[in-house]
Structures are given as structure tokens and as C-alpha cells.
Image (cartoon, rainbow, N blue to C red; front, side):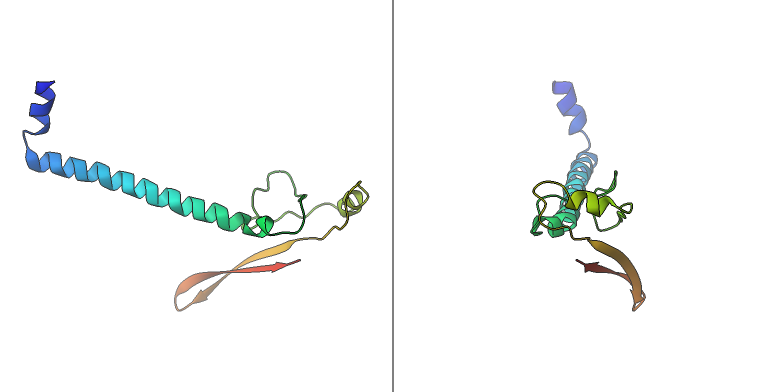
Length: 112
């Protein structure tokens, strides 16, 4: 064990830079994890505040920000006829990007 400490602290500059590098890597991982958590929360905000308790979407749709889920004709009627269904309302989303002052801006257009 003393050999490990000796090698670790033999060159203090290299050791300090290594420790700072590991700390920076951990910090970046935590920041990116925070961004991912924020995107996930933003993607589910609409459904969290919707008055309904069930959403019908195509297989593979995980959020309504970057994907669309057009259901085949007749599915709304099938869902409407199910027991306990009071209302069927389509959710239409269309992600739009436009350029403003040289930067691409995301605009979310939703209609219920």
C-alpha cells in the first residue's frame, strides 16, 4: 500500500491534474444527467396536467415532443365505446424549428 501512495504522490502536479480531471468528469456527468432529467420532465408535463387518465398512442411513442402518433381510422371510435370512457380528444403536436438571429429556435404548437 505504501508503494501506491508513493507512486500517487511522487509527482504532485500530475496527481493534482488527475484528481481535477476525475472531478471534472464527474461534474459533467452530473450536469448532463440533470439536463436529461429536465428534458424528461418537460416531455411529460402535458400528460401530468391532462384531465384524462389514459392516453392511446402508437407502439414505440415515448413522448409527444419529437414524435407523432397518428392512429389508424376507427381507433377513436373503438376507444369511445369502451366502458368508462367519457371523452375522446385527439392531441395534435407539430414541432417547428425556425431561425432567429442566426440561432435555431424550437416552437411547440399543440392543439387539444
